[in-house]
Length: 269
Image (tube, rainbow, N blue to C red):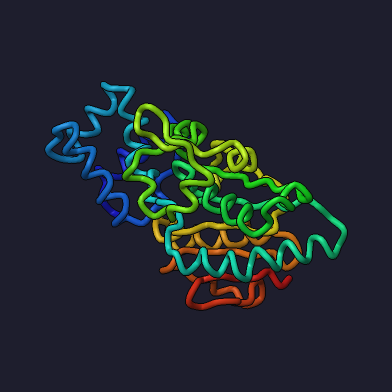
């Protein structure tokens, strides 16, 4: 990254917030920073840096612009079909066979919670009344604390639940007086939200299944390699990793590919 003015902005953000944005792909940085230039009416990076130093609230707005990712319920339906028909039943079967009850899932970059709630709905559909035989905990994390706060409310506007099948809406959502749809407690109780920095944060323990979708595409190749190893260390034996539709794992010594089309991998070492 050779643009000195852009680097000056990133250095300033790091000094004030501790957030190191230099690991992001330059194209991602420039595209999302452009939104803040427009919003603050800054003509160039130099003007934006001056604005940033004079307006402390802008630091959070910059971080939000960089870290908020588009998500939706049951995004990439085929992947959720595979999870429901194959991956999750296998995890449940192996857990029961080992006479264990706890199943831990990690949704990384969960945004406003659509992905982890989708997983909880699928598990409820698979197990039905047997779900209480297991201790199912879906850890949902995001760097952006504002979306975590929204996710905890479990409330969504009509436009945000367009991909939810009607039968799931009827069973797992309640429509309130504000024309919002709220996740029922029998689903919500399985999901735990927290702010977490995947790059610098501590380990959250071992997981049966980790979903890290459409996050690596924003990072440099160097950082992707580091994060793959960190995720590998966070998986239990034969644990499963699901990546985004344009992301792949190139570490054959760490993972085997269960589905090229769905970008699903299994820990082998």
